[in-house]
Structures are given as structure tokens and as C-alpha cells.
Amino acid sequence: GLQGPGRPVENTGVDAVSELRLLLQSGTSLIAIDSAEEQRVLTMMRAASGSTPVWTWSAASGLCRDGNPAIYGTTDPDQMLSNLLAMTGPWTAVLCDPAPVLADAASLRSLKELGQRGHPGQTLALIGHGLDIPAELDGLAHSWRLGPPSATELTTLVERVSNRLGQRNIPVDLSDTDRTRLARARAGLTLLGAERPVRQVAWRGGRRGAACGRPGVPGLQTRGVSAPRISETSDTFGR
Image (tube, rainbow, N blue to C red; front, top):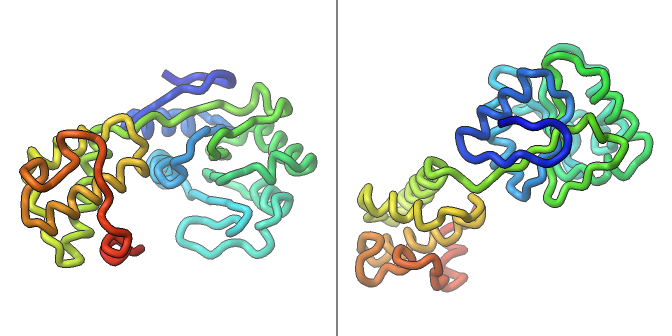
């Protein structure tokens, strides 16, 4: 269940989206999310927000609404927070790696004011690994932690990797059972941590024309996977 300020609640998969949606709909002004999986959290935050506009901020990119360029000058934390304080209507804003905001006294005060005013439909989320929330936000920031990926997320990852290989003309001969077993073998890893071994197993299966878990394709029986040569992986999976 949900929990207020204090010890974070750990959530996984679809349940995480439901929990975030409930936090947003209940009028929570500040959410602190301790996670290294920034993109995964952003995906879930967008799903939970529904039709509410989602804004993201980083010290490198500034403040931008999804699908739009960043607002000029908003790499500066004070300017970014001034823009948020001036916004009317519902919005969800996500600050990625907010250490520069939390370290600045004026920015921290603006953040506190955002949390205190509690406008319905307006939520500010802080995302960072090892996020340390200052005492000034005690009682305002609701701590929330994302748990390991669900079976559905891992299965989707296997499908996505297989599709990428197929687009590079590398057939992946994995049966439905193989894909399920491959996903289950990565249970407990972060989604980012699971992607590389999934790529390696699927890649080897495609290169050798064998189904995952059959002779010559490592990784299904054990969690460890010997990496292919760097030149091969970079050519195949360059992003």
C-alpha cells in the first residue's frame, strides 16, 4: 500500500503504475523516488499521469514538456522552479538527479513552497539514485522506491531485444517457452541490468541459428553469460 513521508514503499511492475496514479490523483505535491532506473520510472510516471502534461528537468537539458523543446534558461534551478510555480492547471513534473536543486537554499525554499501549496493535479517528483531528502522537506515529500521488474516487463524486454535483432537481419529463433524462461532467468535484476545478458543470449541464438537453451546458446540454464567480442556487440547494438 501507499505510505506517506518516511520509509519508502517498494513497488513493482503494473502495481507501481497503479500506486503512482493513486499518489497523483490523491493530490500528493512532492514525491521522492530513490532509483537508478530513471527511464523506467519516467515511463511509469507518464503512464500514471494519463492525459496530464508531463514535464521533465535535468541540469543538462532544462525544463521541457514532453514532445516540446526545453524552455530557455531553465537549466538554472531557480528559473525552472519559477516557471513551475507560475503554471496553472494540472501538471506532473519530474526532476532527474535533483542534487543541484536540493543543494541551493533558494531553490530548496521554492521546492518547499511548491510542496506546501498543494494545488490539486500538480505533482513534482524527484528521481535520483541514493536520493537524500533535506530535513526542510520532512513531512512534505512522500518517499517511494521502485522494486525489481515484473515478469511482464522482463517478457516485454525480451520481445523488444528480439525485434531489434530482427530489424538488423539477425533472426532470433526463440520459442514462446524460450522467451518465458529467458525472462524468468533475469528475475531480481534491474531492467537495465537485465537488458545486456538478454541481448547476449538472443544475439548468440540468432547468430548460431539455435533456440535459446539448446546446445551452443549459453545463458538460459545459468544467470552468467560470457560476453561476445566488443566489436560484435557494438556493431549489432549500436544506439
